[in-house]
Image (cartoon, rainbow, N blue to C red; front, side):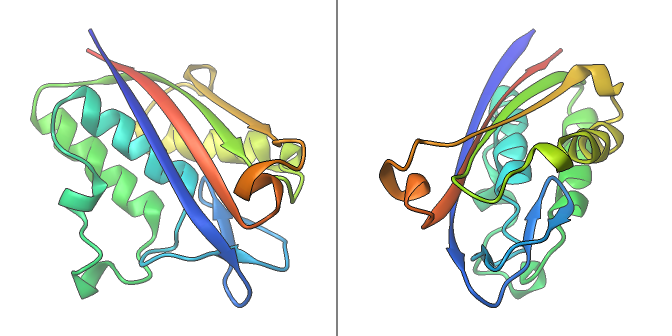
Length: 155
């Protein structure tokens, strides 16, 4: 068994869609990034890649490569799953936390969990997605960005 940890952060800006866990969240700002900037899926991918000692998403999907501009992070997650399986690993579970002052994410958590469980080929009971604020503190608390952490178990 191996444990992996992932972290990602993106700035909130006007003129972009807010996508978390493959779900478009209605909000007046979105996350800035080379791909769709799905901070949650990026943290999950890094946790899985780290557990398998296969690098990180920056190595696998570099922002210097134009073919990843605007990329759907759910598709990238499926590619990570294919890669880890090809290297003899299976993801057993993931536990995640999204840190955002706004918008309120609780109405979207179950759909996000379903998307992630489908991409990973896991039962939804093996995917945990939590959301929290920072009580107005720091860059996430000030609404400047959103961060996410993820841990996973692979065998």
